[in-house]
Structures are given as C-alpha cells and as structure tokens.
Image: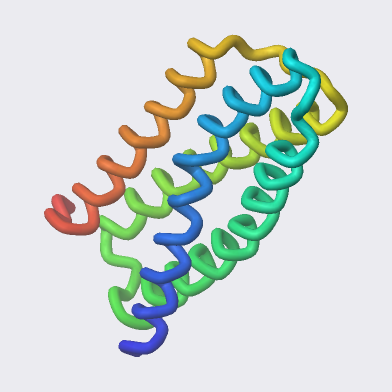
Length: 136
C-alpha cells in the first residue's frame, strides 16, 4: 500500500500546483489579452489545467482506494472526501473560467480571481487538518 500512498501524495502535489496557479495565471492572461498578446500565456494556462486534471483524477482514485483498503472509511475519511469534493468543484469552476478565457471572455475581476484563489488555500488547510488531526 505504500506505493499507492506515494502515488496519491505525488498526484495531490501536482493537482495543488494547478489549483493555486491557474486562477493567478488567469489574472495575467486577462491583462495580456487587454494588451493584445495573450496567446502563449493562454496556451500555457490551458495546458497546465488540462494536465493537472489527470493528476486530480488519479489523486481522487488513489485516495478512495486508501480510504477503503487502509483506513476502512474511518469517520475522518468522510470529512476529507467531502472537502476534496468541494475543492474539485472549485477546480471545475476554474476550468469553466479557463474555457471562457480561451474564447476571449474574461468576466471575473482581478479581485474576484484573487479571492477565488485564496478560497482554495483555506480548503487545502482544512483537508490537511482533517488528515493530520483525524478529529473523528
């Protein structure tokens, strides 16, 4: 089971990179689009999002495997799964914003994107607390 835990942690790290970086990259992409030269930054942002989506799926699958086979769905794993589901919803919404940005639509303000980015940090802190403390 150690190798599954290692794969899980590696994929979580990769997914978190995108969760933190893509909303910030959207700010820069929006600014570059206003200046007329956003193609390269936009493509990089899209590729980062798409690549890390696969990492997120692997992280979720290995996490569920660990919850079932190692921790027997202990009560704290239910809290972790719920929090990860919220973070995944945040990630899907990020993907919707990336899709709109690819079409040249930037609806969200810089402030919204910054706050949106900070929400993910709070979510990750909550997940880490549940995993380390195992309060239930």
